[in-house]
Image (tube, rainbow, N blue to C red; front, top):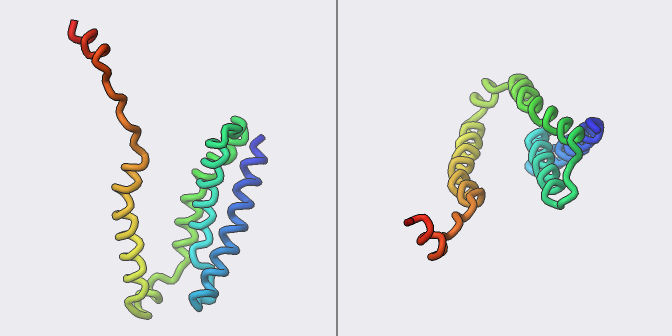
Length: 134
């Protein structure tokens, strides 16, 4: 049912917000640091884990997860719009350094993820080669 997809999303959101709060306190920032992003990563991980386990998600549950996954991007954009970007930029180069570091890591991971996602091509056997040559 769709409600299970919403339940999975809500559990991931609660875990992500908690992790973001803990991360913020660990680095000395009195705010949630990356809670929404952590929640989205948890949602992707658990959805993939359930699918790869063999049991899979029921179609209605999968629809619920897909809907909330799709709606998550506008939510993140709206939350980012509320941030005081001008204040962060005037307070020092740390915001710029953090952004550039995140973008650099993301760019560096593209080839790694590409290699992990590729399937090995099927090797041709001599019998199949002789049949195609005819």
